[in-house]
Image 1 (tube, rainbow over the protein chains, first blue to last red):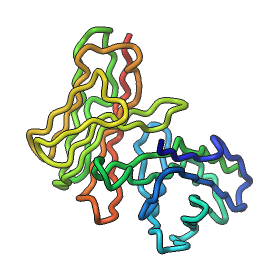
Image 2: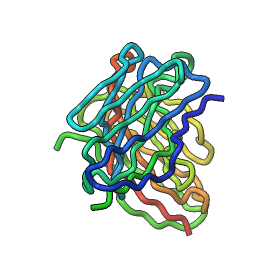
Image 3: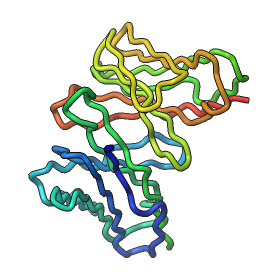
Length: 115
Length: 114
């Protein structure tokens, strides 16, 4: 069956360090992958999308990589700040077959940045 | 205001009652979704809709009913609520597939079934 796994449920780092979150998938061949941020009591908010032909994508302090051979995406936050503390979710389209436009989410990694 | 809104934000109901959660979006996105989020499970798809009058089951549809008579509304009904349906429910919308688009989520409805 298709699976998305985010290896760590929680990640604690010191302010100023780089946070690296991992997303692995099996039995998919996604054309692109998305990352979302979710704060407590709120819905997920889109951050970045990376296509299969893009090795890396950046947005301000965020960087995403996409390795279709390893079936893995890495999400980096450089110079992390306490305001970056949140849960981060990766998401893939379920498929090009019967399901139309469904995003399947990993369980998320809760990032805590300590001052 | 433009966006996607859910109502109510919080709901407590009794086992066996029928409950309807509302979702409204102002972008005319063709795709709409209902997810539930539980500790240890993450976001799981309940139902989705590709357009008005077109709906289909997701991963966990049992006990839920949806309708989509208008593009902007996608209500979710729990026909006879059970304690296992206590959860946080998120509605989302997305413009047509194939454009590599992101999903926009509502603020969620926290439902407690007692």
